[in-house]
Length: 425
Image (cartoon, rainbow, N blue to C red; front, top):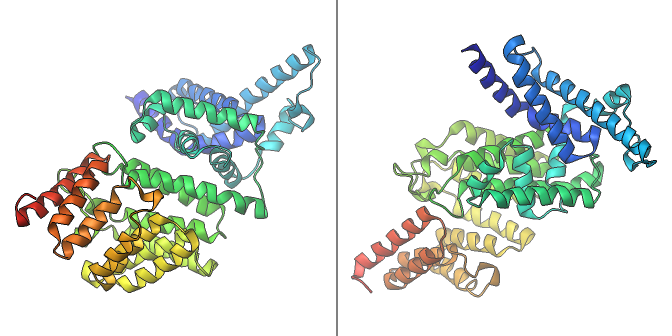
């Protein structure tokens, strides 16, 4: 019984400490794959020893010490091998030696730096978006390749290959394992924000599969954003990102019906929104607003989410303010998807005819071709205008395009409702 409890404790400790451990080891050995191996060896040592000796008072420090000792042995062996072949590797000339004292001094940085380093490595812009997402979840989320594959509904081999290629790309590009400072750090952060928000969005509205939401991805993205906000507290956009995800997450329990079916924003029971997350989101948005003017894209999206969070009912939503926020967001992003969302807000603020006019102007936009939400929104506006036969066709088109089973069912139900008003078209 005690052994099983200890094992559960070790798993919990690993979940908390693994990213910090990896971040510290990468700084020591300057090799991502080797750092992972060393961390796993430290975990195995804990699984062997702690059931007999008990969990240490500071388990994270114990794991780091165990891993560092193995790192020292590894680097000593490397040094001997180099001397045998009369080669001096660049790591040695850069100050990475096998001397125990030097290694400990070199790697004894703050926890903030260790985690920030790992986030910046995993989200490095030299990697593709898909590779950054997979590597981030593997290194910082502690998820296995199988868990990541199941979350994104792709074969496990695909995720494994992405991770392997990502590590190889980082090595071939000679990506430094140092934390950039000042403007260099600011230039790297947008890549990090993008990856975290990609992970969140896939959890919040899954692009494919049987489930509309995958809450574990939302939670993981929010955890990473909170960590990042602690590491770069003077960056307004990171607080905007946290605010955006906190406010969206507050709706999670109201977004699904009893059978897992989607419930759209205007139909949700707002009493089920998590007020603690709303409060945290509004506080994070206030921090972003205090740090920057004008607001960046994540903070602007958070401000839009705040309009919904502060409205006691759908009818009380300040749609004109939301349109103004979208105006600013379109100007910054020049994104057709943002323009689509703005058209929805215009339809709510100024009538369906005004919204439909904007939607019709987007129908030839290449970036939205094949995107199911364009005909879905058009169908909604047509339905409000009483043009139900046209709405039926648009919902049908959207259902064909949708890859998520739950979303497709919702669109087919809306098409069926339109058909019911006039008889089958």
